[in-house]
Image 1 (cartoon, rainbow, N blue to C red):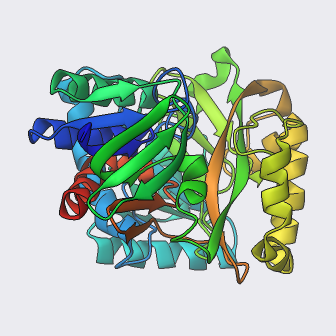
Image 2 (cartoon, rainbow, N blue to C red):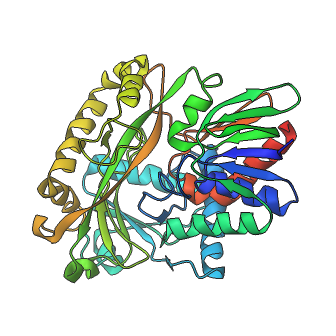
Length: 395
């Protein structure tokens, strides 16, 4: 065997798995088609530590987010990774959103996350520029340098003996009965077991275990507030979350580097790794258009409305500012400039439902991490250890 475990993907979860395995004395090889770690979901995001206040109690997200947030904050502090623990303010503007807020508060209590409902006059005590009919304060939220964090994980994994092979595309994982053969663009590697943590490509490597789901990519586009207006928000200001959707809507977040970002939009992407508005990949687009669940998803009027709104925001800073102004009335379109984008590997079921939770499936000697969307980054330390232990049981 070339390794005890082969890990596909050098994002946050794959790197966390490798770190834990290597520190535990196992031979591990990480394969990634890119030139380095965290070049997709793990490095193209808001850099927010999600405490997990709004997740469905009993879900995998709820299980790992609380511990993940605590450990991630401690990890960054111990290693001087840029971090700002500045808390979250969630704001509701109407009766429907107040209902969402009250449901989020109930979930936070069940999940053991500190959160407090606020009256309108208390909102400005937390964030002076914010306005709303009700608010929810969640102190455990923070911002961090996500890429620096993943680079730290990979560095510690390598120090402990893990090998990282970049520029290496994994074409298939073959179960041999006594282990796996990982077929790559540079040859075949044999291992006792494998972990598929390939993010935006995970369903392709795990197609045999997820015939009921397929990744439909959503592009998250961020704008940024100009430098002289960054101080209008000190932490994170979010709209009340619709519990039926995995998207949080346009919000304002003060990053660890002091920049204030606004977004993201969540429009359908024409390619899994296409980060510009018009970027496209023929194979990815065909996969989306040939999936029955995609058309069933579009049958939901709420989803159709969401997609239309998100396309508008991705094309117009004015539209982005208009939505942000529901939270912070003083923000104007002239205060925003284009920033960056990242794609979400959102699983859609054959029935047309957005898969809300993290999904792990096992087959033979392989563990497949599927739908590892937000808060996968926040969960990555304890979740990575969990996946690593599953892999050892399979190897």
